[in-house]
Structure formats: C-alpha cells, structure tokens
Length: 518
Image (tube, rainbow, N blue to C red; front, side):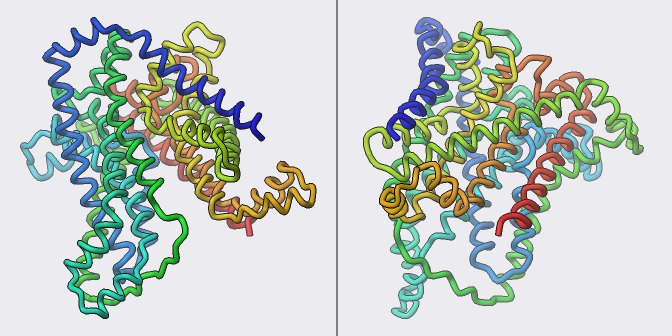
C-alpha cells in the first residue's frame, strides 16, 4: 500500500507543487517592486478587496438566512427552492454578467422598462454578479454545517428557561464561529480570484484578476501575470489553512437529534416571501440570457429567431461543445478514480505517508484556477502535452481535485475500519475489498464526485484560459470570445448550451442512480 501512496504523492507533487514552484522561480523581484509601485496595481488591489469584502458579507448574510429557513421553517416546496438556488452553479460566472447586462445595462430590459439611470458597470455590477455567483455555494456549505447541529441542547435550554439570545451566545456561537469563518474566507477567495463577472461588468473598475487576464491573454506578459498570480495565492492559502484548522477541531463522532419544526403562520409567510425573492433574483439573469439567445438584434429588434443558434454553430459552438464533453467526461472518470483511491489510502490507513498524501490532496484547494493555469504555461511549455486536450484535462483534474477527495474521505471515515482487519484474516485482497464491499457502499459518493468534476469542467473559464488553443477550445471560452466580437446573442446561446448539457447530465446520472442503485 505504501507504494501506491508514494506514487500518488509523486503525481501530485508533479502536477501541483512543481508548477507553482516553477512560477515562483520565474518571477523577478525587480518586476515585483515595479509592480508594487504602480498606481494601476494598487488601485486593482483596493478594488478587488473592497468589492470582494462587500459581496462576501452580502452573500453570507443572504445564504445564512436562506439556509435557516430551509432547515428550520415549516414551509413546503423546500426541494424546489433548494433546486432553483443551485441552478446558477451550472453556468460560468461570466454568464451571470451577461444576464445582468441584458437586464440592467444601458439598454437593459429593466433599465428601459423602469427608466433606471443607475449604471450596472463598475463596483455595483461586480458586487451583484459576485453575490449571484457565490450565494448558491454559500448556501450549500452553510446548510451542511447547520444540518449537523445537535438540537437537543436547545431543547434542554428551553426547559431550563434560558432566553434565546443567551442560547445563541452560549450554544450556537461556539459551534458556528470557526466553520463560518472558514466558509466566509472560502466565499471571499472565490470572489477575489474570479475574473468572469469583473470582466463583463467591471468597466473602468479593474480588479486584480482582470488585470492579470489583460496582461497575460491580452498583452502576453506572462511574467507580470505570474507575479499577480502569486499575490492572488494569499487569500486562497489563508482559506486553506483555516479550513484545515476548523476541520481538524471538529468532532467526528456524535449523536444528532433533529429539530422538531413548529408551525408559525407569520414566520412561514415571511419565509415564503424570502425564498421566492432569492430564487427569483438568482434565476432572473438566466431567464434573461435565454431570452437573448432567441432575439434577432438586442435591443433594436426583439423578434424571435433561430439565427443566433445557426450562427453560433457556424462559428464553432458545436465543435467547442464536443471538446468540452470529451474534456469533462475524461476528467470526471480519471478524477473520480484518482480522488477515490487517494481518499481510501488516507482514510483507511495511518502513517506519515497517509498524512502527506492527505495534505497534498487538499493543497490544490489553495490554488486559484487562474494561478494554476499560468503556472502550467511556465511548467509545461514545450512539453508533449502543451496545447493538447491532455493539458486541459490535467489542469481541470488538479483544479477540482480537493472537493471530490473530501467527499470520498468523509464517506470512508463513516465506514467501520474493522473491514480491513476481517479481510486480512480471510485473505481477501485490498482490490477485492474495494470492488465488492466499499464501492457498493459508496455508490452515491462516487456519483457525487463524478457530477462535481463534470459540471465544473463544463463551466470553468479560469485555468483553461491559459492552456487552451483555438483547436481544442472548450465551449465556456466561446462566451468571452463571442462577447468581444459584440455577439451577445451568441454568447447567451452558448451559456444556455452549457446549462442544458449540465442539466441533462444530472438527469442521466439521477436516472441511473434511481434505476440501477438500490
């Protein structure tokens, strides 16, 4: 087993640590000093921090309220509301920007309808777009946290007559504050390193990721881009450290008593209004680009047409979609197998190699996609895989590795460790144990891992922007390409294609799970 651990550690060093280290080596101290003294750079940092902090606070507050309503209120249609909130996760962040432009741009539908004079471009647009993009992610993480909270303590406090405010301070706060800090930094890291929303809505309000994108993709100044990439590592590394600390301090063995939901008509009415409002706001931009995809010439001629569909395919949308399907399916298969085996080796055995492999498996979580992409340019340039589908598959596998690994790792920790001892006594091989016992018990986990890899490989635009070429371009990169050519209708149709592909894949997987997994 130690050989397998050593092999995976070596692989992760080669595809994660080495590229990042190579980027550091190729960075110049002199260029860093020049950049630090640049007014444009300082402005970009301040813009990034201000917009990201504002969006994080709003996103966390909205997500926290929504999660509490879903878990603790007596309303119906909770599955519907939860499903609607998750839909925005199936499109690239840049698509949210397109939707907001259609609605609130200078010629936006709502702008014209209500005669609004406030511009969506700049700080306001970035914050709104970032909230729309990250709120579903925050909801999932906060809901998972609240779902494992033991409610018996609150019942005991009620019997003793302890007021609600004191229950919050003495029970809720000690349980929530560390994980919530970790979730907050995770959301902040996603926002501060995203360039899709700022690229569409930033205007003159330039953020650090957009500056990095302009320097590398626009001006081909990869050295300057790498320095910016190193700076973008800091919030992600802080998030990673906090996540590890809070995870290690959690109790893994406890009995949870579910909350008994009490009916309250007024509270339920308020909860319905809130959930409907959040669902409406999150899906409205999606409805907007669906509408845009089938109009002749927005905003001059809003009559229905299929011309945008034909034009998109003439410009390569079909080819890009096939590229994305190949990339996403291969990434999902290889990624799921690799992450599953890594989780088995770390969760089901002890030792220094297990700890090293666990750390290495989580480390890619601390590397933003843009930083990973530019590090791959430096590290793999001139190699046999550079410019091929292989490097896109590899960068996606590394970029999204940590979360599926954690899903599998947590599942393995819930299965008794005595299985290995029994298998050893009965002379049953590890491969047979995994194939005949562990895999059947973790079918749902494997499916969730596969879906995670697939959906994220379909929607990502960060890392792949640096390593793809015209011939192997994924469909998500067609969105900024069409938008740059003022073909907003085609960009909208491509966004719709990505959403439909992801929904179809989730339906296929759901059908497979229902029919074949008992």
